[in-house]
Every structure is written in C-alpha cells, then in structure tokens.
Length: 126
Image (cartoon, rainbow, N blue to C red; front, side):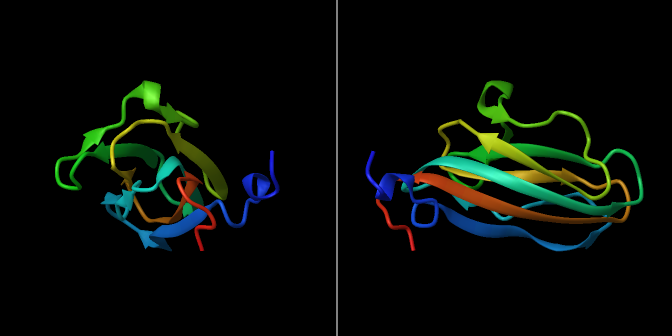
C-alpha cells in the first residue's frame, strides 16, 4: 500500500451540512452528492438538548428530489437517541447518489452535522 492510499488528509473531503446552532423544529441537512466518492459518514454533534426524543435518521435519493429512509442494511451507527454533549458517527453503505441527515428535534437542541466523504475515485481531493 503506497503512501497516498494511507493519507487521511488528501483522501477525505468534509462538508458542514448542519450549521452548529440551537434548533427547535425538525430539520434536514444539506444533501451530500456522492459523485466521485464511495464512502460516507456523518458526525452528529449534540450540545444541550432540552427534551427527550432527539433522533437522527439518514435518507437517500437518486435525484435529490424524492427522499426515502435508508434501509437498515445500508446504515452504520447507533440506534438509540443521542444525549446531551455527545458526538456519534453514522455510516452510509448504500448506492444512491444523494444522502442527507433527517433530525427529529422535539425541543430546543444544540446540534451540528459534518459529512465526511471517503474512498475518492481520484486523489488528492483538495
């Protein structure tokens, strides 16, 4: 394995898909276009959550218009609701071009989401 294949800086592309802020209603992240990449993970960072029931789900789409819940077989990560001051990783192993995070926000919750695209078709990605 060559040095470029083990280089985490030039083989990973990150995008902020939910601005870190306090939200009080359900929201969807920006869509992530998987073109030219084969791997995707989301880092969901939760600050203070006021109510139980905050939940994270992944949705995918072939066209960035019609969205469906990601099948359990194509999902990696926790299944329980997130607690205050936690960060969890969610992986996507499906084959749809677009993927997003759907957040269920029952009350004031501080949250931010980072998308991490990996396994690029061409490197470096920067």
